[in-house]
Length: 150
Ligand SMILES: [Fe+2]
Image (cartoon, rainbow, N blue to C red):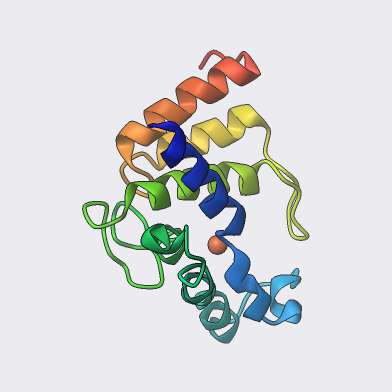
């Protein structure tokens, strides 16, 4: 990836969840099981985020990375359920990085996973949630960073 793309990706990644500003705080901070209404609320955030990011001149051409950051390789993601062939590369990278970050961070409803546990989860989701080649790259980088041999 060239320097321009890396800079583009950093900006998109920083803003990928900006659409959550329109999700009710009571839903975002909820510690018990989410209702289907809560989920419908949460599932809007990629669309709201896309609407915002596409107004930013230097990001608008890649705003679909925000729109599709919760889509999955197997087509079981949201908001559209498109599959890996249709998901833009930036969206795939944001998805796997965001998931690793979420897994290794404490949440109101669960403790953080260790890096080794999170890497195992990424492996399990190879070609399911995540792009297979990106999984391999991600695991390679994380193993180096964490000095883990699996
Ligand atoms: Fe998100």
